[in-house]
Length: 116
Length: 216
Figure 1 (tube, rainbow over the protein chains, first blue to last red):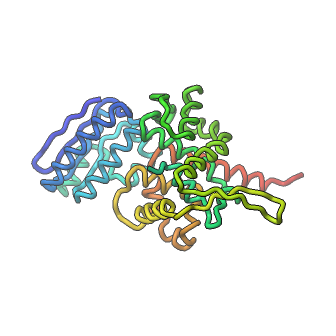
Figure 2 (cartoon, chains in turn brown, green; figure 1 turned 180 degrees about the horizontal axis):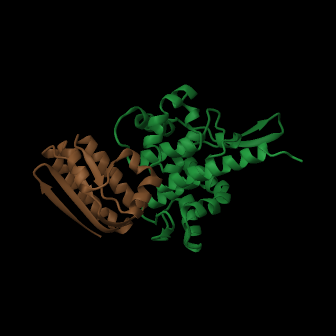
C-alpha cells in the first residue's frame, strides 16, 4: 500500500491506498502518528480519506483505532471518509464505525470541519 | 508482561481460587480462544479479514498456549475466524492448563488442591498477591469510566470480559446497566472479539431453543 499526507491550511489529509494488512500496518502507523502529531501542534483536524483503500485487515483496523486515540488525546478532530464497500463492511462488523466519525465522502467530511 | 488470555483467566479466578467459568459462564471458552487469537495477531503471527484468517509466521512465540494455537492454525485449512473459533474450542482445557502453568511459574498463582466433603477433589489457583488481577480490573474500569478512545488491547480485554460474563465478578448489575452504552461503544472493537461475541450469541440461542422445545 502507499499513503499520501497533505498538510492543508485548515486540516491534515491522509490518503491511504491499496491494501492495509499486517505487512503494511507498521509503516502506515508511523506515517499516521507523525501526521497527527503535526496536526496536534497546529490544532488542525485530521481527515483520513479512504477512497483508494481497497482492503483492510484486523491488523490494519488497529491503525485507525490508535489514530483516533492519538487525535482525541491531542484534542483534534479525526474523521474517516469515503470508505469503499468492502472496507465499510469491516468497519461495521468490528464496531469501528460507532467510535470513529465516519463520513460518506471527502466533501461531507470537510463540510463538517468547516461547519458549512 | 501478562498476555490478554492470562488477564482474562485472572479475571475468572474467584477469591477462593476457583475458576468461575467452571461454574457455568458459557462465554468463557470462546472468549479465551479469541484472546489467544488477538495475542497472536498483535505480535504478527496471524492476520484476518471477514472471510479468512491467515498465518503470517509459524515461528514460536515462547508462550505455550499461544504456540499450541499457532501450530494448529498453521497445520489447518484456510478458513474464517468463526470457523477457527469453533475448531479451537475443544482445545480450551489444555490451553487453559498451559496458561495456568505459566501463571504459576511466574509466581502469580499458587496451585492448591482442595476437596469437598472429603471426596470431590479439585485444583484451585489462588492469586498470590492479586496485583495483576487488580491491574486488569483497573484497566477495564479506566476504559469504562474514562472518555478516551481505548488502546486495542484494552478494548479487546473489555469486550472479552463482557462476552465471558466476567464483568459481573467486580461490577454490580446496576453498574453494568449504567455503563452498557460505553461498554458497547468501546468494548471489543476487533474482528476476533466480534467473532467470539457472535459464537456466544449463537450458543445461547441454541441453548434457549433447546430449553424451550417440547420434549414430546
